[in-house]
Length: 120
Image (cartoon, rainbow, N blue to C red; front, side, top):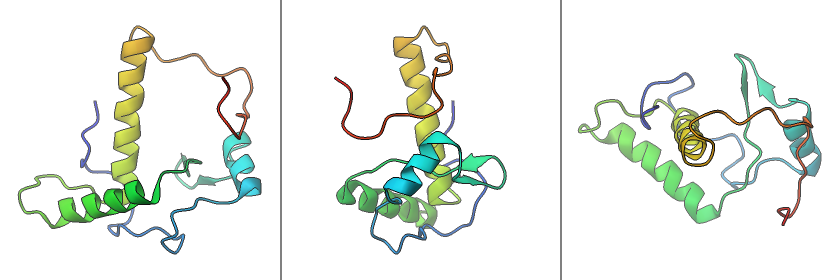
C-alpha cells in the first residue's frame, strides 16, 4: 500500500497552476479529461477531474507544505500531486478490498463517464 507522504515524481512546490481558485477546468475540458484522456501529461499521468470544497483544498495544501517543513516527517511528499496520488491509491485499494474481494474492478464498458449529478 502506498504511504501518503512517500516519494514520487513532480516538482517540489505545493502550488497548482489554477491561480489558487480550486476549480479544475470547465465543462469542455472536464469532458475531455474524463472521456478521451485529453488531459494526459507526459509520463503517463492525467489530471483528476474532481471538485473538492475550498476548505478541503486549503487543508490539503497546508498539510503538504506542513509535512515538507516538519523535520519529524521522514519522507515528506515531494509535491501536492504526489500526496494526492498516494491518497487516491490508498482509497481505491481500500474500496476494492472492502467491496470487491480485494480485486480490481473490471474496466468500465464505456470510456466516457457521465458528468453531472450522481446516478441514483
